[in-house]
Image (tube, rainbow, N blue to C red):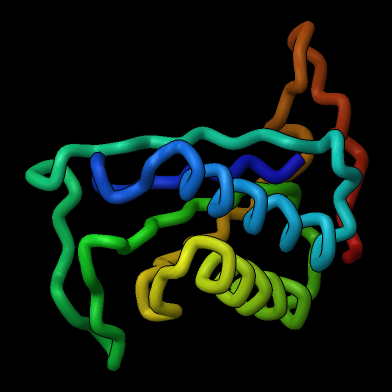
Length: 133
């Protein structure tokens, strides 16, 4: 049930480039977390430059106006190694697909218990599931 929230500066990503970013993220989730292809939830936010504020550089990274801020939320339980692999897989795929610098990907992973998610009807369909990818 990964939910990807993708934030970019308005005007930097046309429809084709956004589709490449979206596809690369979903491909990494399928590859690394082994989610089924139909497990697809993404929100894409285009913010005006004056609402997308960030430092030009941090911890050795140099950011441009192509910076993508990505938040990925999924059910807890995956080992640290899997989460680290996911960060690398997303970065590599998005950089290649959308032509962005590998520096221009800030990714945050959020893990939540299955009982905190409802796919509809107010039921926690994954309340007793612990992911093990």
